[in-house]
Every structure is written in C-alpha cells, then in structure tokens.
Amino acid sequence: MFAPMGADAILPGRSCGSCTMCCKMFRIDALDKPRDIWCRHCAIGRGCTIYDSRPDECRHFHCGYLFWPHAGEHWFPGRSKMIIVSEMEGTLLTIHVDPARPDAWRQAPYHADIRQWAGWAAPAGHRVTVFAGRRAIVIFPDRDVDLGILAEDETTLVLCHRTPAGMQLEALKVKVDDPRLPPSAREADPPGAARRTA
Ligand code: SF4
Ligand code: SF4
Image 1 (cartoon, rainbow, N blue to C red):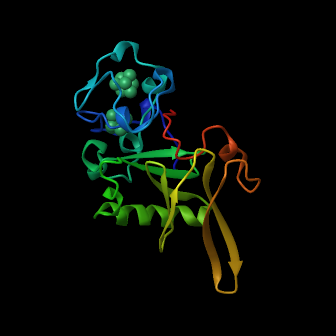
Image 2 (tube, rainbow, N blue to C red):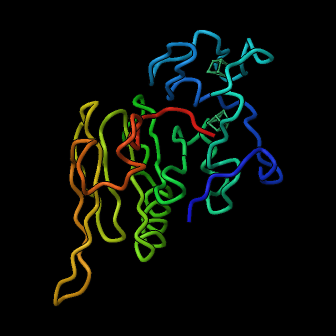
C-alpha cells in the first residue's frame, strides 16, 4: 500500500529544497551518525556540504513527501518536522517526528491525515506508526496507542482479533525476535530504527 519508490517517481513540483530534516533525524551508519542529531556535514536548511561524495545511504533515500501524492504540501518535512517513510515492503507507514517537536503529529491537519491513512491501511492488514525518537505510537483508525519508549531490542506488533463485535486491533511492544512478527520485522533494523533505506 505504501510502496517505496525511487528518484524517478518524485512528484512534479516536489524537491528537498530548503529541507535537511533527514540529515538530523536519521542514523547514517557510514558516518557513524546516531539518529536525532545533525550530521556534521549538514548546512542546516541549505544542504549537504559533501554532496558529491555523500554516502549511498544519503544518495538513495527519498522520503514519502517527495513521492506520495496523499501527503499534501503541508507535509514538507522542513515545515512539518516529520518524515514519512514506507517500511516492510510497503506494509508499514512510519512517521518520524523531530524530538524538538514531539507533538507535531497531534496537530491539525496532520493528525486527521494520519488517522485517514490508518483507515486505508487497516483492511489490508497494514499499519501506521508514529515514532517520536524511540517512543512509538501505533495509529488505528479510531484511536492512538502510545506504547512508550522502545528499547533497542524491541519493536511493535499489531494483532487482529476476530470477535462477535467484529475485528479488534491490538498493539503491543515486543522483542524483535518475537515469533509472531513477520520475518522482515525480525531483522537487525526493526521498524522505526530511523535508518535511511531507499
Ligand atoms: S526529509 Fe525528505 S524532503 Fe527533507 S531532505 Fe530528506 S528526503 Fe529531502
Ligand atoms: S552526508 Fe550530507 S546528505 Fe548525508 S546526512 Fe550528512 S549532510 Fe545529509
């Protein structure tokens, strides 16, 4: 549903422009840069000072704002302070929130958008999760489930229960080797790891 796309799919009129948010919020292993601190090579709001020799992790990354038409112009990360990422082969939409603005996702019109996307995702068994640093909030069409801070060896799991009243969704915090997780979620980088992937 939230399939990742390459540079050739960037929407007309969309570009990074003055945004450098992923140079702060994401891990860059090639530079030994942790998440949520500015890269030492970033000219904030202007761009990369080593553009021609930047690591492949940077070169191949495109956030959801650039290619996903359902994210309106207000999702420009330089303004929203949030980065949309498609993970787990398009079955998970992750919204990474700048720790300096941890409640940005709750504000209008963003929260309504996120709930709408959760409504689209649920029938397909897909899901939407907000990450504010290591704090995970699973978004369902009718509610937000704050799972708190995830340890490095923890991730999120959504269970779907059939009940007489219909399908009930449950969000849990689990260890990354939990056998109930799909194989792609039991890898070294669980969802929300804030690592750049193309
Ligand atoms: S967050 Fe998106 S728009 Fe901003 S610099 Fe990174 S890829 Fe470009
Ligand atoms: S190397 Fe350049 S593109 Fe990559 S994180 Fe640093 S400033 Fe951003």
